[in-house]
Image (cartoon, rainbow, N blue to C red; front, top):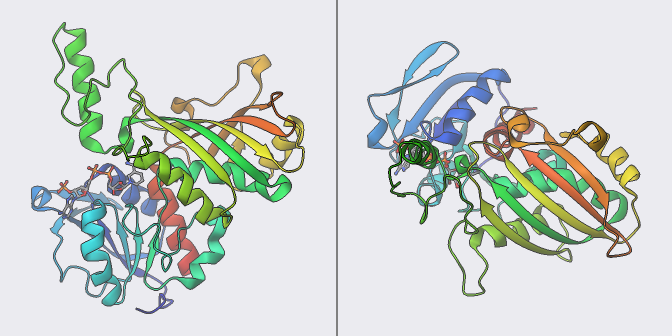
Length: 339
Ligand SMILES: NC(=O)c1ccc[n+]([C@@H]2O[C@H](COP(=O)([O-])OP(=O)(O)OC[C@H]3O[C@@H](n4cnc5c(N)ncnc54)[C@H](OP(=O)(O)O)[C@@H]3O)[C@@H](O)[C@H]2O)c1
């Protein structure tokens, strides 16, 4: 397992190339003109026979096997944790650097968990596998790291409003089908979610733990501490699935060691990489999922001082979960490796 050998162009595999994230990865690689020599789209037997389009060319989707990743330089994985657990070590052993979107490796102490705007230096200690954080974590840390550097964030209380694309393409289809059914006075039949998601909100993302929290909520706790490099930050989360197609929104309350006014926080965030402050209530300007969909930046609005504690702030943070929350962050990691 060696670091990436610098070349002018790279052989790139996308594992899960037909999924919601994989499709976006291929688009982002093309848009950002990543130096791709060969693109290898891999998926399950369900997709063999189909193609993906890259730089105007239709490329056949191939079945992922133990031999597929031989001679690959960079493997972008987004086919779920089971696939990553089985195939990422094989790819790394064969000389590829794996950038994995699943939860399989994120909390492994030997695997860096990276958001380039926050902790790109952690990439230097990779051993062949690099983890991409959970979508809801990425957008939160992009917004909070600059405030942490300025005033030290002691505590975070976050509530998320997460789109169905965060669950994948079948969930996007389910929302559409349920809307069609309901508008034709038919009873919807949920398959992906335990209840109807159309015109509803589910305070349930990923499995419940004995503590009563969900795994998604605990990802926000553990991943944020690992990426920010500060185990002392106190974090509590409630994650909610909402009937939105793309973009997650988050109501974030923070308590800082040093006082930051709302004005100072806006100034710090305006200068921060990857953040766009969109905050003018007098003109009804605040970020919404529809604004963020298809965009690369993390939007921050509704910045207010929390009068209930001495050093508190409230923020509303919105980003495209398929781009900054997944595909874009993974490609940005790849860009750091080849720079
Ligand atoms: N959606 C998000 O916002 C988001 C954000 C961050 C991380 N992630 C993570 O990214 C991963 C993929 O999510 P997604 O939303 O893109 O899901 P998705 O739309 O359901 O796509 C899953 C992809 O994985 C492929 N796949 C499934 N089983 C496979 C197997 N045994 N061998 C090879 N390929 C297989 C599928 O291929 P077929 O089409 O052939 O079945 C498809 O290309 C998950 O680990 C998820 O947690 C998602």
